Image 1 (cartoon, rainbow, N blue to C red):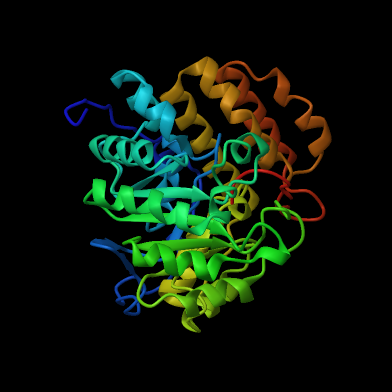
Image 2: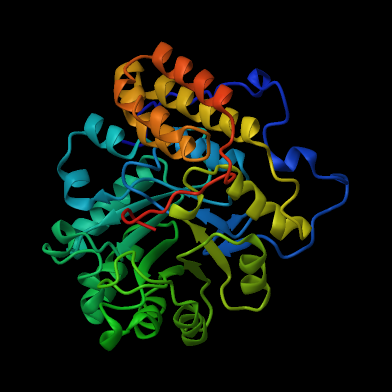
Length: 377
C-alpha cells in the first residue's frame, strides 16, 4: 500500500476574505523569535507546538485536519478507525478509510481494537498509508465499542492493554501512543498505573482525558488526576484533554509541568480561531486580538467549501451541516437560520445561507461556543 497515490487537498484561498481572517495575522513583532521550549518531542518525532487536535469521529477528516494545521497545531489525527475493518479492507478501501494526504505531515492515525496481532497489522497499514504516529483509543465510552472490549473497556485490564500496545510498538518504527480516560469510574481510577505499564512496553506518550468512562462527557475534567499521571511516568510526555477552553490556563498548566501538551477536542468546534489563539498564547504569551464575527464566519465558510471540494458537492454539503449549525449559534436570529440547515443540498445553498448569516450579524449575547454532550474529546 505504500505506493498508493493519493491526491492532495487544496484549501479555498485566503484572498476571498475582505478582512483579516485569523488572530495571528494581527499579532505584532513577528521578527522576534518565539520563546524556546514550545515544541514537543514524541519518540523520534519533533513537533512544532504541544497543541494537538483529538481524533473525533465525523469531525477530523482531511479538510478539518488541513485547517487545524493552518491554525498552527503540532499534530493532527485521523478519525478513530477500527483495526479489524482496516486489516480486512481491500487496499483501495483502506486508503479511503484513513484518507491521509501526501501533504499531511505530521499526522497521526488512531486505531481501536483489542487483539494484539490485529492491532499490530493495522498499525503497519497506517504507517504504509502515511501516518507518522499511531495512537490507540483507550477512552471511547460509546456502548458499541465498549461491548466489544475495546476503548475504555480495554483500559480496565492493564496487562491485556500493555500486550496490545507492545505488539504494536514491535510492529512499526514510528511512535505508538495511547489516549485514555482517568479510569472506568471513580472507584477504579487506573490511569497512572496504566500509563506506567505502557511506558514500560515502549509507548512514546499518553493523552489523558480528565473524566472517567462512566462520566462520559458530563461534569468537569479532573486535571489533578491528569497531573498524577505525569507524576507516575518516568520519561514519556503526558498530554491533557478535557474542558480545554481557556488559553491562559492551558499555558499555565504546561509551564507548571502539570502536562507536557494539550489535546483540543470539542472546545474548539464552532470556533476555529481558538486553536490559533492557543498556539499564539504559548508562543507569544498572548492569544492576540479577538477576530470579529465576519472574520470568524469567513474562516468557517472556507472550511465548508473545502469539505465540498474534497468530498464532492452532495456529500460535502451534507457533512458540512453540523459545522454550519455551530457557526450559526453565534449570530442574530439563530433559530430561524438553523431551521434552514436541513435544506442545504448544493454549494449554491451553502453560499446563500452564508450570506444570510453574515447579514444577520452577531447576536446580542456575543459569540457563543456550543455545548457538546457527545463525541470523542
